[in-house]
Image 1 (cartoon, rainbow, N blue to C red):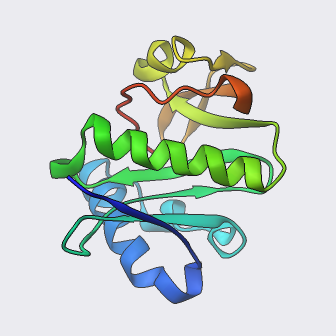
Image 2: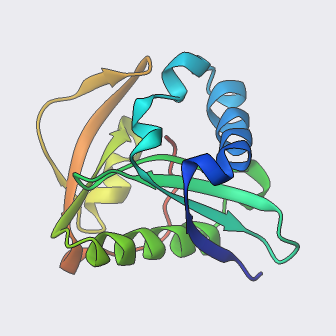
Length: 152
């Protein structure tokens, strides 16, 4: 399958970005809208993935401090190719922005997947949106995009 990945602005693509995130986070994970959508959306860089029919299928955001967040992939597109495409784009964008590393607030059951791919634990486990998480860091020169099952 072919995917087109673009960096997009929140204001110009808000409808598409919100639709994906609402399906994944609000409907599937029961995260309240007021938690899901925040002021960071206005300043973060957003990534939008579309399939070969130009249908929006995934999104993520990259914050100025290197935090990768709000990774949302529609259920039928959760496969290695989609995640690899999205993560490779994020890594390139982070490098273009002059970042040396990226981080993610990872759900606990996926920590081992990320640490096996070059991420390292940073700090203590904490709660975010009612979900226990672990902050993970990765230097961009160690970034590896083997299969992940990312959420939020």
